[in-house]
Image (cartoon, rainbow, N blue to C red; front, side, top):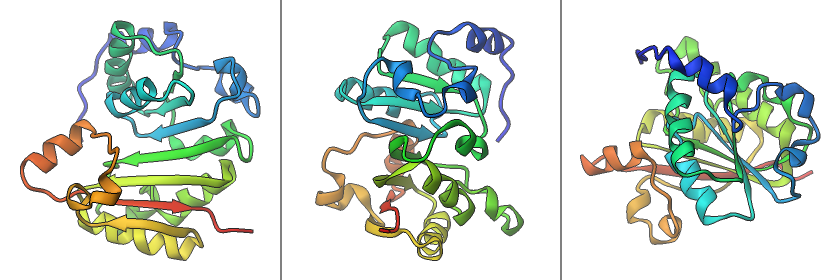
Length: 215
C-alpha cells in the first residue's frame, strides 16, 4: 500500500498529548498514563482510529491504546481526537514487533486486530499480525484470561490465522466466516471503515476470538 506523505504528521505526533513517545519508560506502569486502574485494551494497526474511538466512547471504564506504525495515518486519528477528545485513549506510533519491550507481562486485557495487512507472499508470513511469531509476542503481554479478536474479509489470511492459532497453542473460542449473518457473534459489533466498505460490496467478514493457552 502506497501512503501519501503528510509533512505535518511528524510534528503533530511529537506534540500531541495523546501520543506516547517515551513508551519504554512506562513498561509495567501504563495505568499511570491514564490515571486509573481500568482494564487496558489495544488495537494494533488501528488506521484512522474510528473503531478504537467508537469503542472508547461506548466504554469509558476501559482504557484504549491504538498502535499505528504509519505517521501519516495516525495523523488522521489525531485530527479526530482534536475534534472529539476522549480521555481514555492514547496512541503509539511503533512497529508491533517491539510490544514486549513496552508492556509488562499481563499488562493488557484485550487485543483487537482489524483488517490487517495480509502480506500475501509466503516469505512474508512472519509479518502477518496473526502469525505464530506475533501470537508469541501477544502471549507475553496479555493477561492469562485475556482475549484477542480478529476481523478480516481476506479468506486466505483468515484460514492461515486459524491454523496459526492451533500451532501456537492458543484456544479458538469462537469464529465465523460471515460475521454479519451470525446473530451471536455480530451482537454489539463495532464496524470499522474497511468493514463497511468491504461488506457493502458483498464481501463476507470473518471473525475469530481467541485466548491464551490455559496454564
